Length: 205
Ligand code: HEC
Ligand code: HEC
Ligand code: HEC
Ligand code: HEC
Image (cartoon, rainbow, N blue to C red; front, top):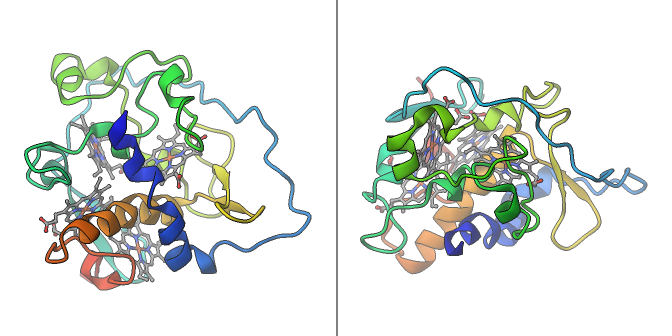
């Protein structure tokens, strides 16, 4: 899965820019006790909607974030011209567990025994089993218990032994601005907002 790297590759640089405040090296902090918590909840029985525009960060002090989901997944926005961004570039748990295991640090599939890869085709064919979970159901805000897994996920920092707690802010920033940094490298004129362009994403209503 070539495009998975969109989440993984840019994290080092994004972490440098964004993570600093949140990555507090905590000497003596407990190492993650593996095996990592495996979500056990079954996919919702109700058909889901494919949202077109999603308002994220309604609780963010800087303001909410309007995310055009369809432009991001239909090919209108792309990294390789003519090729839509893969669903699993963002919905990283919506792939077979055997596939997920091949791309550390990402290892988690949901549901844990998942055998299907989320694609536009799968979505169009069978929305009920496509199994898309909200990011926030695992990447909860600080102090909240996630709905699908026992605790907010943590990964090891790229270059130190510190653990990064992937709360909503970390997970979204790493995913969104990680990709945008790559996009900007390939095309400086791109309007994809990078890590420090806070208020291009966050807008007060
Ligand atoms: C590419 C778009 C984007 C950029 C650029 C961006 N953010 Fe965010 N930010 C988000 C999204 C999306 C969320 C997650 C909101 C959610 O939980 O639904 C978020 C969440 C947050 C949160 C957590 C809000 C909460 O309490 O739940 C804070 C704080 C924050 N951002 C601050 C910043 C700051 C400061 C900057 C600039 C240094 C910045 N953001 C740049 C998109 C962005
Ligand atoms: C660029 C990132 C990105 C891509 C690519 C992407 N999505 Fe999403 N998708 C999101 C985000 C962010 C949300 C909002 C999740 C949340 O609210 O936590 C979302 C939400 C959804 C939801 C609603 C989930 C719910 O909470 O009910 C569905 C269904 C969905 N996406 C399907 C797809 C499908 C199918 C594809 C591929 C054709 C796709 N997405 C591609 C980022 C993406
Ligand atoms: C079922 C739970 C679950 C859902 C849903 C989920 N994640 Fe994650 N995410 C995890 C776990 C657990 C990790 C830690 C690595 C692992 O075990 O796969 C992680 C890791 C990450 C990372 C870190 C990758 C890195 O190398 O820096 C990012 C970024 C991320 N998730 C973003 C998202 C976004 C964006 C969404 C929604 C489109 C999402 N996640 C949905 C559980 C989830
Ligand atoms: C896999 C790559 C990728 C990911 C992940 C991604 N984007 Fe983008 N984004 C793009 C590209 C490509 C563009 C279009 C750039 C252009 O055409 O100039 C873009 C443009 C944007 C823009 C400017 C245009 C507009 O629609 O207002 C915003 C805002 C934006 N993205 C927000 C987000 C947020 C919020 C997230 C995370 C939830 C996110 N993006 C995740 C690739 C990505």
